[in-house]
Image (cartoon, rainbow, N blue to C red; front, top):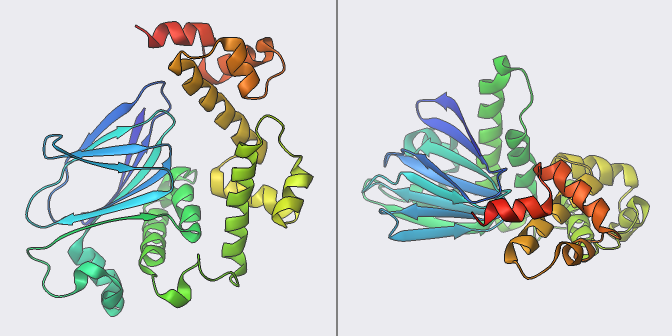
Length: 287
């Protein structure tokens, strides 16, 4: 498991949480009541515990949770499922207002005085948001430009998140070509998962979603950080891991369920990804 913090300024921080382990991982971060919290769940599921665990908010893949409470501190206590990714943006109300003062009417908690306010929302991550979020999760530029890059991407994310007018709602406007392409690539991901035992060829997949193969390859890599079939392999093996943990299937049955014709090929792929054989993984998880 890994937590990475990028401090853009005293009033803006970005946290990236990755759980590449075999079990749920717990992360904690102190956050005072001056900060708005935005939690983007990009992979698997995330569980946020508040008030010493008496209150829990659950986020599923492709959801964003926004919290704002001026009356009390809300430290982050995150339980992240195996394979999970979460990007958390912490920004003060003053900083947000300074960036978007001319567009304050778009931001719900800018209405009236905010000194004694509480605000909470949970929404789907819209297509245009997926790209800058995944770019931050996979940041690979020189450290010297990290702060500048993160500041620009944070402002892009905030602008896209609060861009909620009906005319600009990307889910309702199929005439915006780039965002329509993003939805098509998401459809390609869903088709791969639905047909993972006998997946279509890249050409067949591109035809199914009405995109050129080159656009599908480039877009899939940009959106999900991997090639289409690299993503599918990771998904199949992670799905296999969950089936094994259910203890309802043998190794051979799990191999067949995720599309492997022989157990030996499945065992080799599983060991390459997780570092242990399925049998050893089950033994370790039962301890």
